[in-house]
Image 1 (spheres, rainbow, N blue to C red):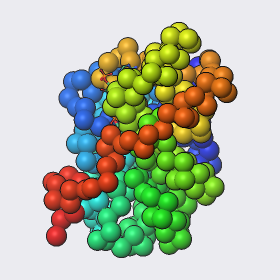
Image 2 (cartoon, rainbow, N blue to C red):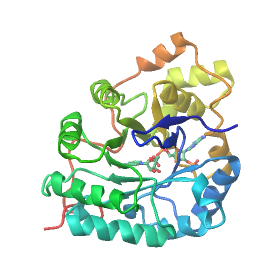
Image 3 (cartoon, rainbow, N blue to C red):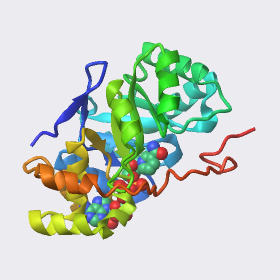
Image 4 (cartoon, rainbow, N blue to C red):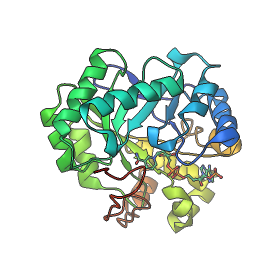
Length: 279
Ligand SMILES: NC(=O)c1ccc[n+]([C@@H]2O[C@H](COP(=O)([O-])OP(=O)(O)OC[C@H]3O[C@@H](n4cnc5c(N)ncnc54)[C@H](OP(=O)(O)O)[C@@H]3O)[C@@H](O)[C@H]2O)c1
């Protein structure tokens, strides 16, 4: 079965399920990614900060590039104009491709001009190195600023989203501005499997807790990016489109919000190697 898609402002189709690749590498990643692509995934989410683009490049070399939707991200320390260009070129080199379907600002960096970063993104799009531009971990305030100063549409905001962190105002603002929401950590890194309603619904529907949570998100018009190192889980996470939740059950999950992030916590460490801001 072909995975349904969301249409981006460019007209490109973004598959509603993508294979997440944070914190996975080497042979584990190669094996899980092959299982994903063989099972019918056509959407892969990576980032320069994940340090696994080489492995992803090796695997996708055996598949038809035009069939794939490939996303990467530029680190917040690399958001100056020339650094964005260099980061993108390096990602393309490692991935063994000459374009990205989507290039995201991984995290906002208030120390570097957003206008400058988005000028570089627009240049990459003009040059055909990236087909769509977006952001990640942006608040509604930051996203509205990005829309205001960008010459190219901000197609996506990738944010932490799951039943315990539903961010209604941010998601509504994204949808109002035709910014597709992608759920990072859609399984709350497995914490959500402890939720009693998720467990009850899994029993009732004869599905796994992961499938209940992912199906709920796509029914909320959110693209999901589950990560798994297990070929069995990888396949399970794509089996979401031949069944649906009743409206009343969807509402039960809507009521589970507890404003509880697993990674997008309020305080940031600006000194880290990967996500920090260099001086
Ligand atoms: N933009 C950002 O800043 C940002 C931040 C976080 C995440 N992301 C993106 O979102 C992706 C997903 O987030 P995440 O990796 O943090 O966490 P996640 O997808 O919420 O959870 C991953 C965990 O769930 C388990 N899992 C997956 N499918 C399962 C299933 N069907 N049954 C049981 N367990 C299952 C995995 O274990 P197994 O390996 O055992 O299956 C793994 O421990 C990332 O890989 C990345 O692409 C982006």
